[in-house]
Image (cartoon, rainbow, N blue to C red):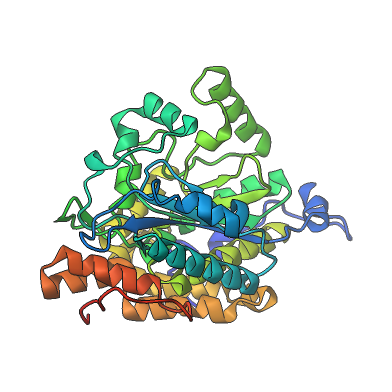
Length: 416
C-alpha cells in the first residue's frame, strides 16, 4: 500500500509464516490445500426492517396484517419474522456475484414495501427507531423466541434493533477461521460506514451506532477472540454446548463468525443502512475484504493480528463518532482520522475488486463518505426540524431510494 498509516498495516506487519520455499513445495503445509480449496466468495445478504404505522410513525406489529405469511407466498423462505413483531427480515439466496445480489435485494425491498403499504404499514430501514419504546412492543409468540426471552429476560425484550448480515462463501473451515482472525481488524471500519442508529427512546444518544451498544447486553457478542485453528474453535463450541451455555453455535452472536450451518463467514456488525445502494456497497466491500485476505493467506502472508481488547477500542470509537472520529493505529501508536483509513481500506482491496466484478459497488463507499452515513443524515433532519416524526418520514423515503418503480404516498420528508 502507498500509505503505511492503515492502522498498523505497514510492510513490516505483513510477514511470512515460514522462512523458505524449496522448489515448488509450498512454504507451509496448508498452502496446497489453500490453493485447491479457493473460496467461492459467494454472497448472501440479510436485512432487518421496521414496520411503521403511517399515522403515528411509531413501530407497529405486522402480525395481524399477516405480512410474513403473505410474503412467503411471493418470496418463499426469503422472508421471515424476528423476535419483535415490528421486525421483518429478508434474505437473498446464495448469489455468485454482487450484481446478482443487488438485483435480488432490490426486488426483495420492492416487494416488502408494496406488501407493507397494501396492509396499512410502511417499511423503514434504520438500525433503531427514533422514538419507539421497546417496553410497548410485543414479542413474536414463536417457541424459539419464547426460549430466548426465557433465557435472557429483559435483555432480550429490550433488543429492539435492526441489522445487516452479510455472508461470504468460504467452504474450507480451517481457511474460514484464519480469515476471521484477520478480518476482525476491519469490523470498526464497517461499523462506522454503516452507522444508522443515533436515536433511542426519543433521545439523541450522542452515538452514531447505538444499536451495537443495545446488542452488547447479549452474551457472546462483540469481537471474537483469536483462534489458532478450526479445531480450537470447534472445541470452544463443544464446551459451551456440553456445559449448557448454548444448544448450538447460532447463539454465538459475534460481529463476525463462521456460520454454524452454512459454509460462510458471516459479518454481523453493520447497522442496517437506509438506502439499498449503501447495503450493496458494504456487502461488496466485505466480499472484497475476504478475497484480499485470502490472497494474502494463500501466498503465505497475513494481515497483522491484534488483541481483541485493542480492536474493541476502535469499535467503541466507530460506534461513538462514525466517520467523523479517529481510530487508533496500534502499529504506529497514533490516531488516524476514520475517513483517511477508509481511503486506505479501499486501496487495500483495490487489486481484487475487478476480479470480483464489484468496482462500481465498492466505489459507492466514497458516496457514503460524501453524503454522510444514515446516522449523519438522520441527525441533520432532526437538527433542522426538531421533529422525530420527520426523521421517520425521512427514513421511509430513503428506504425506497434506488429501487425504481415503487408506490410512494407517504408525505415527502423535509429536505435535509
